[in-house]
Image: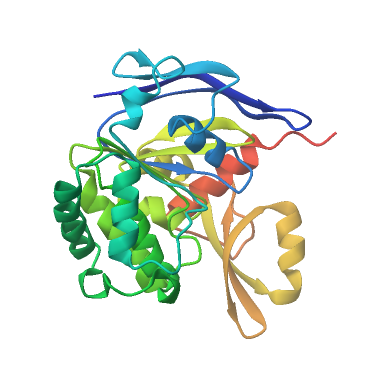
Length: 293
């Protein structure tokens, strides 16, 4: 089972290329698509979900070109877009019935599947409540339930944890991990901890292009030996940032403990630190930026 992306590109009139020369082969498991806002992630998601057509390149599902046969993937696709909308007056059960009808599912089988999925996402007891009264996390769980109605072989979720509180975010990440199995799951996000917790493969994007494709362990190796911790005065933090790539900081009164990514120690008091995926991500994004004129 493969979803193959060959030299994909998307150009918008007046805006230029939002996606360029993007080549990737997706197989079962969770692949994390990581990049800042504006990196082209949502554009790529919409192309894969057959919502929009690429300006260049093609997508192959089991060898079939989706530009010519989009239904080949649509029949087995689950999609949770970033701007997932609801009908607030409908209950969760009514909304799922509506989505099932839109997907052409047989009503009796769809109702059985709906009840199973609402239990899976921990909404069984809330199934008859209006969606307008649901929290952001509960709405996202309805979103993932509707994406699973047709038991998809390909599941695409775009920024699924944006706006969720920490507890809901952890619950959602765990759910995605449990759902992977023999599915292709593509998780798009700008939150490093989301892919760190769920993905076995991470694709990093920047400025509409792929800048890395690796396992989490492989990304960590790229930055190993180049991460430091340095305590400095808060007043000196801006100056430190002009000289080095500074990641996470922790304030301790007038002092700040900063993580610095650098080939050499950023100061006499700096000490080596274990690398994190956030360190690797920051380094990759910095390297991908155009050189200053």
